[in-house]
Length: 173
Image 1 (tube, rainbow, N blue to C red):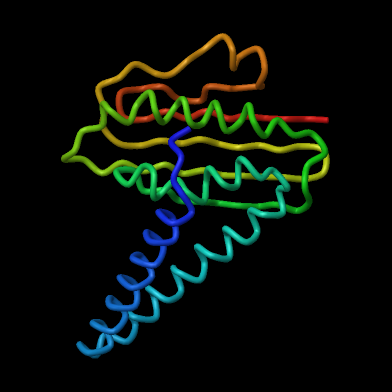
Image 2: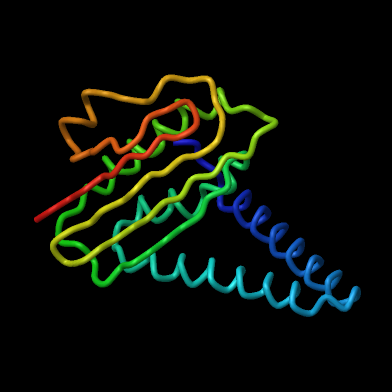
């Protein structure tokens, strides 16, 4: 996994925070109140999602998601999170390794002139954890696959095309 130091993450987070504040100020200066409110709402929703994500009690997966933006800036990460309770069944290390290898596989082949988006949908209840990895964009790479992960994780392929990869990782008790 591409590791960042705590200092690098904090510097990047502070930079993002200042940028958001400047964007809000600019909108307020231009009397675009609704736009400023929308930025604040989006920022709050993003951090609420990250807070809810901590309920998973899967520290490596949470860290991977929280640092994704700083390690892979060419891909916009969007989250949908429904964590009722922490799942009993966890494959934290295997999950992170699979997610990381998939992104590392495609990242060097991304088209720099196209938008790339990863939608991670995480659903967790006591008896099940489901992570949907839905990547949209443009790249020149074959889909990622590995026997190692097929044996350790329950992975369902929903879509594999040049512009879309969608996988569902499911863990049941």
